[in-house]
Length: 456
Ligand code: MTE
Image 1 (cartoon, rainbow, N blue to C red):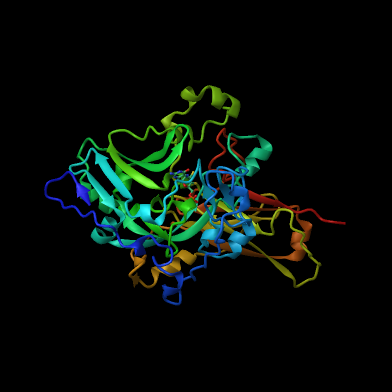
Image 2 (image 1 turned 135 degrees about the vertical axis):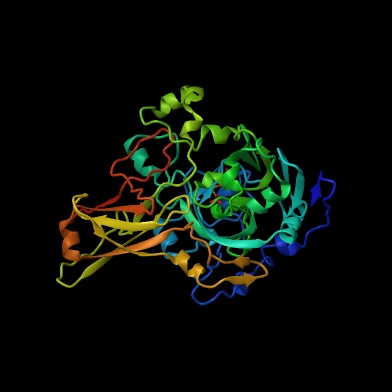
């Protein structure tokens, strides 16, 4: 660690390749958690780049061809088919994890990653530059299960009704992984933000975008809170981050929109004001509904008020089975039941406390059964050299998706014209019935509906 502070020390030695080499950082098989833990999924990313990427700046990256590309060839933005994501279980294998890239992925090979540093500066008593080795050696290594959700998840539904500025995310713009790193709060306490002056923490990635680097910020009080669980992470499900997910190091911000989890993290600035990065300002906002996307484009500087900034995820849920367009063979028999299934999540660490299903367009609701796989990590602490501490025993926060099921006689389903689902969290935030069309198409959390059409 290098520091401008006189009493700190400096170590610039190459860090051991095991930190970032995907072969050895932590072989997924080496992880032998207590039996109650959900299994670690295997990565099945192909070992050569796809032909479709060849003529793009990302031509060197290996990617799963099953992922649905949502913005053509480049930049790479994708989600897995919803049922593939869901069937993979609680933890998403890297080859099915959604990706949101605003530009080309910084090309950092294993060798360069040894020299990767993160500069922490601004309104602090000691400015520091940390290598990955410093982070590993000097701070407690922790692992947390976290569901990342893109703010645009489910935007396709709005785009069908009123086109927004953003592209069509289905309902698979979310994924869950075990993220390993150090608490951001530890780093901030180490550099000692200046009392009174310092109010925000700005993060910047290494990607080179047309309007400058990708960057965003957090309130200092949140960033220094362990309860909020923010991590500087270098591993995902026990493997080094893949290039698309931020190799060699990224920020993980649980319970907030995915856009806050800056990839290829290079710089952290403690500041009196929030980030002035282009995308922090002109993205990740829910603008008032009367503003059309066309006006939002032209009247940019007028409308992008900091008041409309979004941080925490809103309560949300989706039906996964049956899928839109699925052909269900519902032979009407007295005892036959169909199990409707889906997921739910909320923001800010809040727990989902009910999921309700309606078969009569919201006139009446029935409770679904909820399963919280995240709770399995609360039972036994787990220590491992690659994972550090995996211990949720004292943590009350809920940072992951949960699953729900609802059994319905097929005769009822056959009589219904739609399935609607809504979730509520412990602060009694409930998904609204109606769409809130907004220019950016973010935090799309109205009731999720699947229409039932009887075939003749
Ligand atoms: N960080 C950088 N440097 N550049 C980006 O384009 N995209 C953000 C965030 N971090 C982005 C970034 C957005 S909008 C999301 S939703 C998440 O990364 C997606 O993380 P993932 O691609 O690992 O799923």
